[in-house]
Length: 315
Image (cartoon, rainbow, N blue to C red; front, side, top):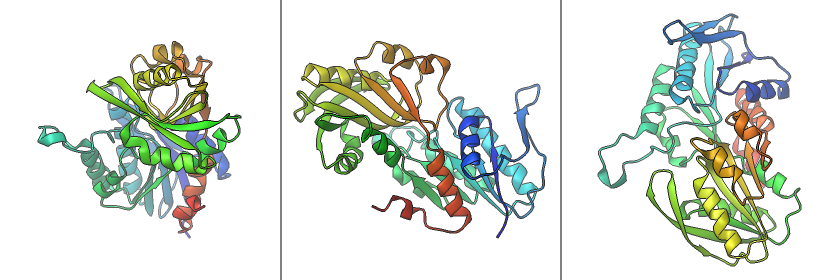
């Protein structure tokens, strides 16, 4: 069996190190930096010939820089005769640009990125909670999309929720919320119906379900500016919710997210470490992070050993 080696770009160094620690190994020796003109510079400083290589790199902000780091690292490793290259992308950027709405003259950028990674020499992709699961079909190589929900659920069961109800922040998240509700002792579910007049701006309209006197658990795949989340929490509290917790896999936290969360009525926001948090977000008392390093390490081990990934999520 080829030697398994882990490499990491500059997007998620702490997560990469945690994964390496879980696998009782060290990160590969690679210098990933910039030339004086800002172009990506990569130098692989160890033998990778025939190796089973995993590159850990979220394509979070700065999205284009991190994507180019990943692509250039793949090329460097491919030219160094790596046996197999798996791109471990905890957060897959551009995933929200996955379709043309009403035939608008816009790109399907998720497909562009998939083609980019496939063409440069990626043999396999491992990612977490794709914004749209059909993005897997954009790739010409196998894609393993694992789920952060078991980690989030484990935390939900430990925080002492009282008479909980799982809340989907929109119609699109109903399947996710239903799955969490079923695993959370088959609890009830509510849905927030909202209208979004433009990007990153939403208006909560009404709540489907009775949340009065209950602990509400909002679940989503990502939090961007937090505007939608904060308005949802306000609507829930106005309807008599006792406490509001928000769980999401990907903490994008762009724009004025810190300000929104600072003044929010949300009791606690729980996210995963697929994207590093800014110091401003870390300073917020109502934001807590869970690590996916154990789950990703196990997925990497299974891929390297040609074992089933889906078996990780069978109940």
